[in-house]
Amino acid sequence: MINGKTGAAGMALLLALSRIFTEAAALPGESAGYGMQRFTVLVLSFVLTAAVYLPLIGFISSSPGVTPLGAVAARSKLLSGFFGVIFSVFLLSGAAETGLRAYYYASSTAFDSAPPIYFYAFTGAALLFTAYCGLEAASRAGFITAGVFALLILLIILALAPSVRTERLYPALTDRSETLWSEILHEFSLNAEYLIFAALCGRINRRRSFTVPAYIGISFAAVLVMTFLYTTVLGRLTNRLMFPFYTLSSISDITLLHRINGIDIAVWAAAGILRLALFAFAFGEVVKECFAGGRDVKPAVYAFCAAALTVSALFCSYPELHEPVKRISGSGIPLSAAAILLPAAAFLCTRSGKGASE
Image (cartoon, rainbow, N blue to C red; front, side, top):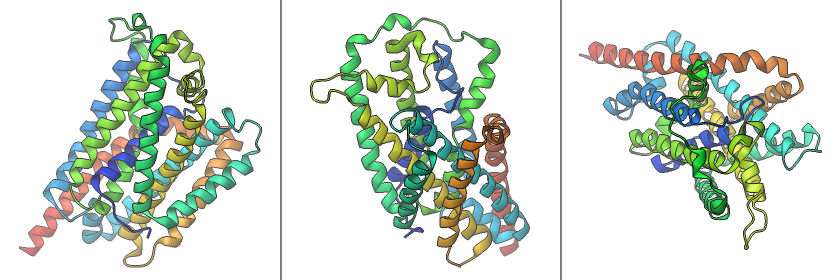
């Protein structure tokens, strides 16, 4: 079940939900800032994201039926082990941060009085069940969650349309030019879905290259709409709020549903668990391609789930442990390094393999 496959549309939706989750479930100090610079940062960060995907898409398009990690593993055990270790560390870090985001969101909204053990027990049970059901089941859940998210966006727009103040949009590209590049890098670094896709691209039935533009397009459109709502409804209050989208859902009064923040909480709880499951599935594929050969990787996937939540709980209890990880990942260096090194190694290994066969 863990090694099941999914279609390009299902994977694109899962990756988009994963990316949108990072926008809604902010860590302390990450709240969306008010101002037109936020739009500039979004546009440039997604352009940068699309650019780093190009070598990977180029390899996938030129080598149908071959995965980047598989191409490396077929030529060099040493290089395969290197990428296996690097990807494992990156994936564990991303999963632990996802658990931390989910905890901060839950403890700051609906479950403010619940001890952390209850949150991690519930999340762990849901994550292990999702991992047991497999990628195909997660993809179906992603369609449902994406549909509920689209409904939530629609309800918020309908409810808050009278509160939209378009005069809060002004003709300026930047407001704080000295922080522009650091904000772009931070926004770019939130696209850890690159690592997931690079590991799981072999689990997409067909049209693997379609997944990336669809994921980027859906993510960009959704985050842009969310930012538009922050800016035009909340105005300067935006940068004082930990979770501005939750605030939007909390103040949205409509006739059918008096308060829709319950839908908001359900969407991000499901999206967080699916994102954690994607990291776990990706880790399973890394182990299979780089270390395990034909052996069953289910125990490794379950162990990864437990390790990710354990590290997340440590970050929650000792925030100082998370600070260096946050600085390194937020620099964009790990993501950029993976985006450069893996496709380059895969191309070289594929070409050397063809040369040897000839």
